[in-house]
Image 1 (cartoon, rainbow, N blue to C red):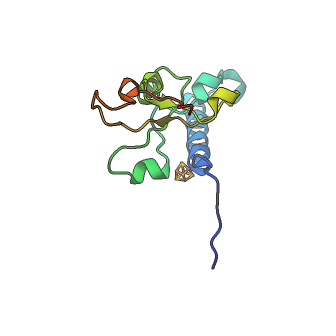
Image 2 (image 1 turned 45 degrees about the horizontal axis):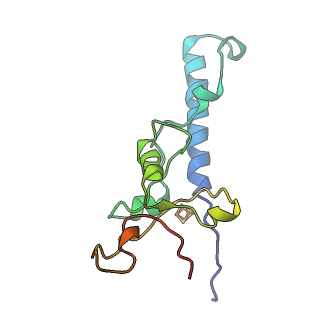
Length: 129
Ligand code: SF4
C-alpha cells in the first residue's frame, strides 16, 4: 500500500539475459562445429554482448530518446561515448572523487548574453555562491 522505493539496477535482468543468450550462442557454435568445448577458444571478447543490443526499460519507454545506455569503455558504443565528451555532461559529486556510472546532461539555459550566467550556457558547472 505504501509502495517500495527501489534503486536503479541498470536493468540487471536484461543484461543477464543478454549475457546468457551470448553464452548460449557460443555453445551452439561449438555444437555445430562438431568440436568439443575444450577445442574451441572462449575469450572475454567472444562472450561480450554486442554493442547497443540491450536497451534498458526506461530507454525503451522514452519516446524522446532522453536516455542512452551503453558501455563507456567500448568505443563502438558511440552514443554514450559521444555524450561523455559533451560540455553539458556531468557526474554527480565528481568533485569529491566518486566514479558514478550515470552521466547527466546539464539543462540548456537561457542563451541571452545579458544574463549573469551567460558564460556558462551549454556547459555543466558548479556554481559557488
Ligand atoms: S528501467 Fe531504468 S531506472 Fe529502472 S532499473 Fe532499468 S535502467 Fe534503472
